[in-house]
Image 1 (cartoon, rainbow, N blue to C red):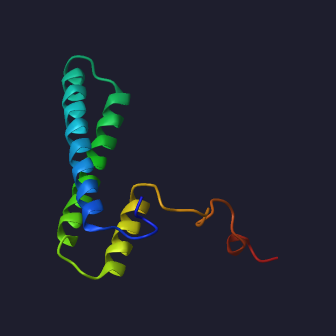
Image 2: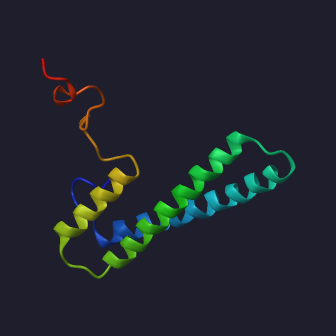
Length: 110
């Protein structure tokens, strides 16, 4: 909610709490999938585990950054960090830049 308008300390704390809750749920799911992999290995589960492990790493890094921001007073810097985190997790981008497809600079000269 606070990505465009800046975050209050309370909003950062709520975000940290929510991330911690989600991390715990995902960590439990990871353990369940690992247990299932022991008896019936699938490539799909292996891919899911890799994705979830990646998410847990990014989420943990974000939480560490949020905790470091608690005492900061520079709201512009905090807002930039929160926007960067949103983009890192796939949100916050309102345009199609960088656009996928052939660019004019990739053409061969005539």
